[in-house]
Image (cartoon, rainbow, N blue to C red; front, side):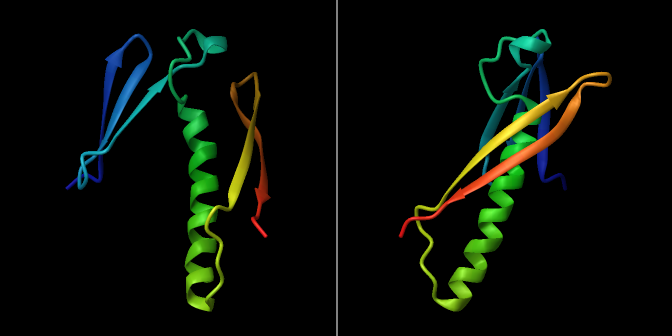
Length: 98
C-alpha cells in the first residue's frame, strides 16, 4: 500500500495525501518557474523535509537523554541554480531556547 498519494491538479499544482492520516500538502510551482507561488514548491518541501528530519532525530536523542529542546527553531534557506534548474545549496541555522 502506498504511503503517499500525489495528484496533479493542473496549473503546476499538486496535492499530496498521507494515506494513514489523510493529511494534505499542496504544492505550487514558484513564480520564477511559471507558477503562482501560492504554496510550498516541491523544492521548498525538499528543504523543509531535511530540516524536519534533522529536528526529529535530535528530538529522539533529546528524549533518550532527558534534554529539553521544545521550541527549537530551524531557519532554512534554499538556494537554486540553473542549467539545469536544481537546489544547489541548503543553509540551515538552528536557534535553541535557553
